[in-house]
Amino acid sequence: MSSTFHNNRALENSYCSRGCAQIFADTACGKAQREEAGLSFQCESAALLQGVASVDRAISNNDVEPLLSGILVEVEGDRVRLVATDREIGVERTVPAQVTQPGRWVVDGKLFSGIVRKLPADEVIWRMQGEGQAVVESGRARFTLQTRSAEDFPELTPMPEEYWRISQSDLRSMIRQTVFATAREESRPLLTGVLIEIEGDQIAFAATDANRLALRKGRLLQGGQKSAAAVVPAKSLNEVLRLLSGDAESVVDFGIQGNEIIFSLPEMKFVSRLIEGQFPDYRRVFPAQLPVRFRIERNAFLDAVDRASLVTRNGTPFVRLSVSNNSLAVTASEAEVGQAHEEIPVEQDGEDLEMSYQARFLMDVLRVIEQDYVEVHMGKDLLPAVIHGVDDDAYRYVVMPVRVG
Image 1 (cartoon, rainbow, N blue to C red):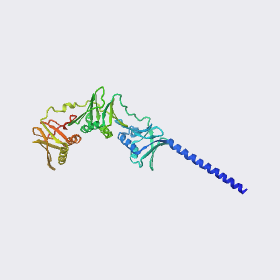
Image 2 (cartoon, helix red, strand yellow; image 1 turned 120 degrees about the vertical axis):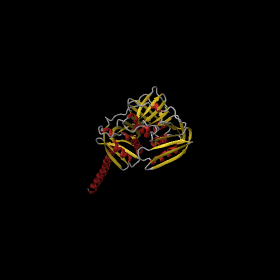
Image 3 (spheres, one colour; image 1 turned 90 degrees about the horizontal axis):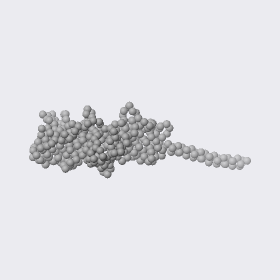
Image 4 (tube, helix red, strand yellow; image 1 turned 60 degrees about the horizontal axis):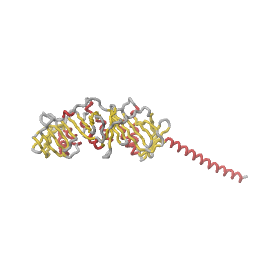
């Protein structure tokens, strides 16, 4: 009897052992399945960071539309689509990912951006749990974020059927060489933007703050059937400049739809509102004839103006340019500070002349001209000067002189 009891107990323990193991396995499997069911995507942290960094400047700070303070996270196919907009600009960026379950959510933009910038591991996992909660995991770090419905999040304007194409390198140069000349004050909104003109396969960017003008011409890789003109805010073009890649072979498609301009880059889209109104006729600014011309090494000219401007601390710094006998004298003075004087050899054509200009207006253009030598044309009676790179027919910069008492 004792032997039978022990045998039955051993058999019972054996059944219990196998049963408990199976129950434990079923429970673990069920838990894993439930966790897998909640998994939305997995991707590289660096790629997600790059995507978030592309869109986060378009996050709205306006309390009127709280939804726009978020980033739209849309998961589908083999990518994650990130979108942010403040209705003035909008940015969309796609990130490659391993997608388990598609979906669309809006997450607090600044919080999500801050988290992604500090993830500790190379991989990041996004999974949904409960009622609208997103769990973001990377290494040993785990964040639980509240999400909002993406139903009312605005869609970015699509690219129109007719659009233009330009190389990224050309677009970068055109923006860099013009956007700095826009006005900073909002009293004349049109002057805070850059005029873009398109005719066939020709494109021109023009910017002015009423004291200077920057004009850059270029050629499109793909033109259109009709001409177009639009004024794009300087802020928007600076954002486009930030989004451009360093790949010399990359191209940008862009088009105008209503009162918006759309730029389409690889894995990215940027949308901006246009500034409405009639841009000033910049062609009238160019003087017909200037009697003085000289050629000078760009960096030497830039450094001399920069050094001379150090002694003008009160008010707007300006420098005096005196050209004579194939030499340019760059001078500046202030009674309570001191004086600066520097001479640089030049190739001079025409008569001698002396004029004063705002130092910043000269340095701004000398920093963006791409040639090693520049050509400067000057005139009398407060006529504007014209500056451009030697043998460069695509770029012209016009700057008004300063009347010095």
